[in-house]
Length: 348
Image (cartoon, rainbow, N blue to C red):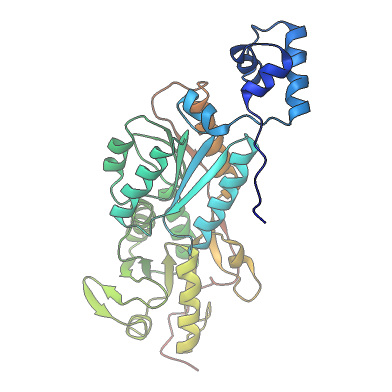
């Protein structure tokens, strides 16, 4: 037997039942205050009786934008970024907006394609969770068609909410220097973004001023090639160097946790032989078996400020040039850092 779907009530049906014109019924649906109270009550009664639901797409076309916020994430495999995206979805919903998610994996072509798709769907705003490969090109592509916000990242052409990345690197340096470490390493991905570079700058300056040194290691954890000054290397050669590196600052917790596993495999004690510090303070960092010393980013505060600022742009409450808001960072001292011993030569 063929099933036929019942016809959904239209605005015209509402107008007929209420005895008004379609334009009057439309004014009531849109919340206009030009309709007299008795007429409004008749229209609302007809809506309730018929079970009429306004066509969201039609409303979006009339307004020129959707009740949607696009969220662009570099990599959902990174637990810090994944958590930011999850918090953003909840914050956006709090304002009555839906979300449209896309991940780019740092691919410039996918960044362009993602933004095109969002603009075609008339999103009201786009939140970028992390940096873009070609941010200036994306800014030109958007061209004011949607409000924009960078969360845990910054761009001069857009509103941004982030932490003081350079200060984060400084407090790691101060912490390790205070434990007597002087020969250190900074571990970053093979394609560092602005945050990685700022963290390195904040870290390396105090170390240099204290007479220490920083080896920059490129590593896409956990299986990527280890590169030092453009040359392939290996963790055993780096961690067993003479004199040894005793303090390592990883540009994110994801990398730091993988480095803990490397040290364990090589029989290098943490923090007995080497101290390791991460950045972000993802939930896994506080687990007893990991207990990672790391720089805490206030995730909920970053997202809340970012979403509130973007909604303010969308709804016309903010009309200033692009705003940069910085949140504070703090060190979470746990069990992966301690005093430099200076006597490590291999496993016990």
